Image 1 (spheres, rainbow, N blue to C red):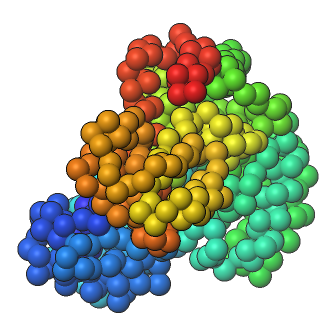
Image 2 (image 1 turned 180 degrees about the horizontal axis):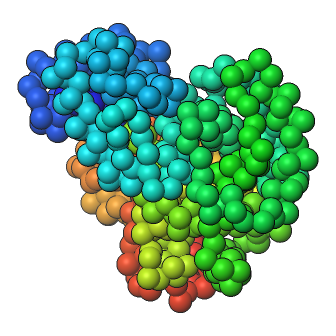
Length: 517
């Protein structure tokens, strides 16, 4: 959907995403080449980004070092996308159609302050995008439809999730009352939701109410089905739903609970048969067992239940609506990228065992939902980060100082305090005045040779020069060095292992740790 943006916005957001993936500075000419623009245009874009998006991200520029995304604010990229949603005519058109589904072209041209030619260019681009999502943009009047109404509702849920997140609420219906209704009903169905999931369910509820108000309902086939247990339980909540909708234009139709149950709690429906539920539950639990065995770390039942619940929901949703969910921004992409960078062996274990869940249709797990799975495991699996840190290869550091042994010990104390568990530390105890070839050869055995001044005759790639006391840039450089060293060691280990599925935790991790020791 990024291609719906105007060329300037698209170039700027692509530039920001490019910098977001880099650990440090990038040459300006290289950045301009990636952005497919001149250096002059790039510098103008940087000014725009810092002026208009500066509350959330900031790009540093140096004539000598290049450009980089400020590390203190680079985790706010999702908020920038929120601004883009609100400023883009294309997305405003999409949002407004939820409330105004019976308007013609003349109305929208005036509403959006566009020329007729610009309006129809936008409509053609949007129409093409929606078709790839299984949706249709009708023109007389303008509205979004699909062969199943729930597809439209899922699309709008994702729109509001990306455009407004957890901390904003774009509807007139009371936010707190809506989330209370979601929490009450989800508890009735033994569905565990965190704050973000509650908000997403609340979006889906309000989208459903708005679509019904505009005259879009589920199929007659669903209405002809006998009420099931979930629907009967939901009907008991009618007084709470009516209270929620007081002083709003919304009313509850007689069988409102079918609309809500089949949309907001869709994970209970859309299965082909009961056997499919059992089969997928078994496969997901087997996946979790395999990952648990591979890292030799238990998964408690409460955490397992939450993970299985979420993955089952993703499966049945994709089985019913087999399209990419994200519009502009994958909120889990950066998180997953960092996990793959810091824990490459664990990430490979997860991806390899995900392939076995659905061998004939792997893209759901290994592509569409991979970022979500990595996020889910790290969030819900108690103490998993601690375990993965223990399994990482420690980086060997030799400390050399021309200010004497006591200064080297001070540097060691600092490193021990700040990087405990990640490094093994040694001090060069001899004089640095007359280093010989044999000494320099010994230095190459360490992952990092850290010194407060250049070492004469030693220019190996494992050399890192720092100030007499660690500056902020020294710490950043050292951290990047440690991560890069661990990643390189992990990649070497993965190459040695070959087919990781058939390996035990001892073979995967402990052989690496034993070799280091």
